[in-house]
Structure formats: structure tokens, C-alpha cells
Amino acid sequence: MALLNDEQVMLRDMAREWADNESPTTAFRKLRDAAPAKGFDAEAWNTIGQMGWAGILIPEEFGGSAFGYLSLGLVVEQLGRNLAVSPLSSTAVAASAIATGTSDAAKSDWLGKLASGEAVATLAIDEGPLHTGVDNLQTTVSGSSLSGAKKFVAEGDGADVFVVAAADGLYAVAKGEGVTVQTRRMADSRSHADVTFTNAPAEKLGGPELSRAIVDRATAVTTAEMLGMAENAFSQTLDYLKQRVQFGQVLSTFQALQHRMAKMKTEIELMRSAVEGALEAIDANRSDVDQAVSLAKAVANDTLRLVSREMVQLHGGVGMTDEYDAGLYLKRSAVLETMWGNASYHRDRFARLNGY
Image 1 (cartoon, one colour):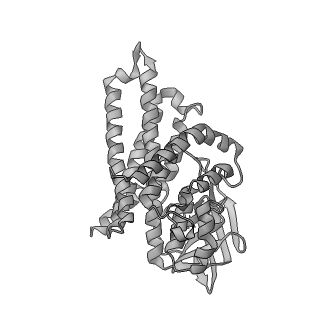
Image 2 (tube, helix red, strand yellow):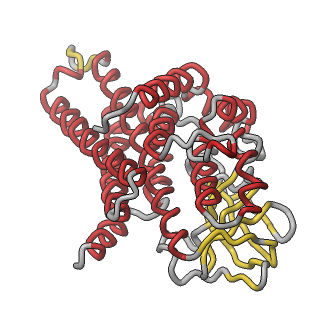
């Protein structure tokens, strides 16, 4: 478990309180049923901007706080607990790409707006149904015009600027000229889109090395959301077992179920170590960031898969109904498991990075 400073503890606790009071799973259900065009609650996003969370990775000179990736992960984890619908993860990491990049124009145009929550940003990386890294991409740039097609772009419906990976590096592309967004419906009822760029004006941020670094950072932030989901799925399941009576006994008194819960708790603690370790590695700019991230994603995928499925199983028949939250966690889990690479992809990557 990471050793947090006073600011990080306060940030985590504030995020937890806000998520519990203002964005519980009931808020997700309302948003799912309303299906707004942008895919998120604009009022809630405005509040997040006012609280400064959108600027956690943005330098102070552009209106951010530069608190780092561990701090962002703490906030994302708390939002993930309640399946809060927010473009925070995508916006923060995309803003980090712009801030790290070499384009002063992109920094001037976007960082202030992103820090305040006035604008939304996202990453457009993958060109197929599976994440395969940033090598061998078909998206190309001629002069300052970018062309290509990106699939499964998270928060693509409401994004004002896309950070796009092309064959020769990373680019910022504003929504508008040369950009076509087509909504893709997925199981988690969140915003995903296929985005086509046709000679879209683009501003270069950096080469392929920046693309790889930003994908690692997006992956690490995704594992923070998965950690929050696993924690709350476990807590809800435990609460249910403590009050549900079967055969004249409370379910939590059955030893077989106690063993299953104990296994989940152990795996979640291991997951926390891996996730926070990856976020700390990024903040410390360690040379093994790529290995730490692949370890975290492989562990997160396995753990959330276990916990979300056990949540359904241990709730019994009602776990299959929309009245209970178990199915909501299961569906979001299925999407996040594939985002930025499944467990097999990251085990293979970890092995290759270690010379195997």
C-alpha cells in the first residue's frame, strides 16, 4: 500500500465523500436511462472541474495542480467504486500528453480549458477490437493533416480534442473539420465511439516514444478504476451475505462462502499493491514503468474478473436481475478488461520486457 501524504489523504477522502453523496450507483442508472448525447452528466463534470480534479496532471502555470498520477489514481478509484460516469480519466491522461508534448500551441489552446473542466479530451489509439500497442498503426499524417480510423474511443462522443496515435507519433486533433464520430453501444452503457479522421488539422505532440508512455499511463489509471470497482463489489457482496438467510442460517456463517470471500479479499490487497506500485513508478519516472504497468493490468484484469463474477454468484438468482448492482459491475468489468490490453497481452508483454 502506498504511503500517502496529507494532501493525498484529503484528496482521497474528498473524492470518496463526493462519489458516495453525489454519484452513487443510482446516479449511474439515471444517466444510463437518460442516455445523454455526450455520455456523461455535464453538471457533475462541471463540479469535478471546479474541485480541480481535471487538472491533477496539468502544470500550475496552466491552471492545474501537478499532483501526479498516484493522486489522480486515488480520485479515479473512489469514482470507480460507484461506477461514476465521468470523462476524468480520459481527459486527465490526454491533458498529460499535451503537457508533456512539444507543441506550445496545443498547450496554450487546451490545457487551461481541460484543467477547469471547460473542455473534454480523450485518447484515440486503437484501430481494431483488441489493443496491440502503438506499433504498426495505419493512421498517417501528411504535412499537418491526419487521416485514419480509431475504434472504441472512450468518451469519444463528448470529446472536444482527441490525442491521436499515428505511425510516427502522437497528435492533438480538435473536434470539427475532418473528424467524424460514430457512437458505439457497449455493455457498460458508457460513451464509446468509432472516430474517423480525414485530413483533419493536427498538431504534433511527440514521437512514438510519447505514444507508448501515454498508453502506459492510461493503462495505469484504468487499473485504479478497476481497483475501486473490486473494493465496492466485495463490500456489497459481504453486506449481502451478512443479511441473507438460507436454510435458517445467515449466509456469512457458511464456511465455504467464508473461504471464497477470504480469497477475494487477499486478491484485492495484492491488486492494490500492483496498481499503486505502477502509479508510483510513473510519478518517480522509473525505468521499469512499462513492467510495473503490465503487472498491474494483468493482476487487475484477473482480480476484477474474479470479484465481479463472484458478486453475481454469491447474490444468487437476484444477482442476475437489474434491481441489484452486480450486473452493472460485471458489464463494466468486461469492458475494462479488454481496454489497453487483456491479461494475456500484458503477461506476454511483461515476459518480453524481461527478455523471455
